[in-house]
Amino acid sequence: MATRAGVRIELVDASRPLEEQGPFDVILHKVFGDRAAAWERQLGDYSARHPGTLILDSPTAIRALADRETMLRGIEEEELVIGAPGGGAGGGGRMRVRVPRQLFAGPGDPPGRLAARVREAGMRYPVLIKPGGAHGGGLESHTIAVVSSEAGLGELARLDRDGGTPLDLGAPFVVQEYIAHPGVMYKIYVVGDDAVFACRPSLGEGDLGAGEGGVARHVRFFQGVSRRPGAGRGDGPDGGSDGGSTPEAGSPPAAGGAGMLSRLSRDAWTTPELLGLAETPPDWFCRGLGRELARRLGLRLFNIDVILPGGGAPGGERTAFVVDINYFPGYDKLPGWQGLLLGFLKKSAEEGRRRRAGGAGGPG
Image 1 (cartoon, rainbow, N blue to C red):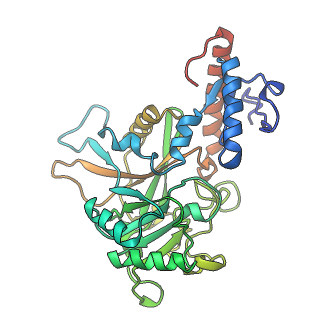
Image 2 (cartoon, rainbow, N blue to C red):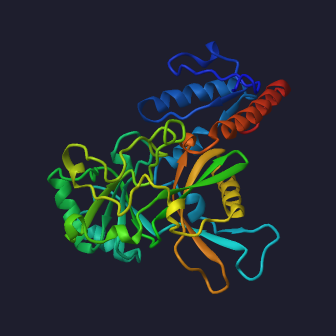
Image 3 (tube, rainbow, N blue to C red):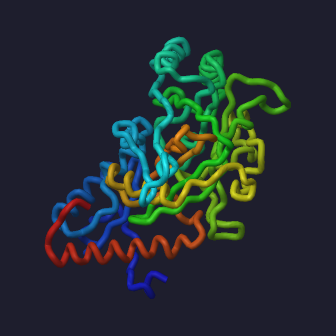
């Protein structure tokens, strides 16, 4: 398919010098973990010698999304309102974008101190506890603890002390206020200048009640909540969440603390479009948000996790909450993803070729 479109795609060997493998019009990369530092040095050296090569995307910008402490700053630090083309009557032609109240904590925050910080931040229960690291293929980076009350923070600490949680509270984590919504998450996939969205299951209000058997608990765990099988095999693309491969919420748990996982109140393999749980965001909002965040973040390939609470402001203005942003997500979960990504790669290759021919750089 790529060859017919005039695009040659080669897999780069990160263990070998890029000079031996080029020249390249475009280098598309996503490297985390132990290899990231060495890769970034090599990529920086190659880019300095070949400034015309288009680097997708900047390692610095990618790194900001790998840490939940920096992930949402592009929205937190500057007001963001997306307007419909041509405006509209009252506020019905615009949507305000916010992030939930959140704070960052770690092993230096025992339950009493953490509870005080939650109160000082003006956060209301329930709150969500997420790992500070947002990328990785393991279960842990896609685990959420739902804490329903202040007492739940103490319960969570006791479980962690006894090795009974699928979360590592010895590492940095984020406490994020839960935003009430019907249980649908909208994943807006940005590919260059294009943006499309897909619906995924989310933790709706109905999922936060009593646990299995109707037993109330102050803390419950969920994994891979928004995962959906992909479009590439049988029922769809390769199954992994957009940030990595995780089991479906409610699937047979792994050994250890993951045995405490709760189930969603509906079949997480069912698309929320069929369930009709919520009104979908307008296309102009998806495109506008994608383009504005691409500008603020300096990225071209990412997805935005958006939830829409019910109701709106008196003037008709609605509020959308961004809860996560992932770099270079699993596009294979989208119908027609091959054509979408190939079109972007072809356009990028042409841009890289022009840059190399002109001998000029510019930001990659």
